[in-house]
Length: 224
Image 1 (cartoon, rainbow, N blue to C red):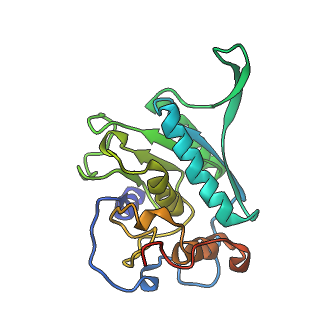
Image 2 (cartoon, one colour; image 1 turned 180 degrees about the vertical axis):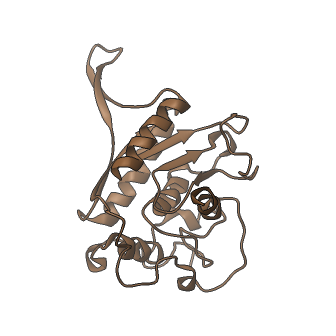
């Protein structure tokens, strides 16, 4: 049964849906957050070691955008460790997992504790990429309010990983797709995905029990 709902909830960037009003598509319509879910206010993030340094910077930029939205009510951070660089100086590096299996172990701990996100980087021909995933999918989560994102980075081309991860992080924070042009519109556009808008933030505020008046967001998507 759990597998069934995970598949139903599968978020595919490439999925196209018919147009319509945004708010009616929310999963959470009650004024209170889901009671059986304990939402942490600090979320650690672990990344796949196969991401390039440039891609890691884009992941950090997506995290920074969401932390700006939270305005201190929540905080997401990339787990890092100190190590000696080639210049013989100490630097901070992502505390990355080096294999899919390693990521799975981390993800299991996140699910058990309710704390943390794992970001996989799987090429389109990787054996671990679910066969149900569309050939046009750029990134996806296994379900709303879950603990992992899978990125298919060899399909990105000149698309912004930062913008796409802002979209996927919204799912991990509790937001669902809406059929109105905004960050949670399910079909990628570099204009739609460049702004964390009020529609998206309102969903997260409702699920995470945040003070909407204290959050930052763009009033409308940038292209409206």
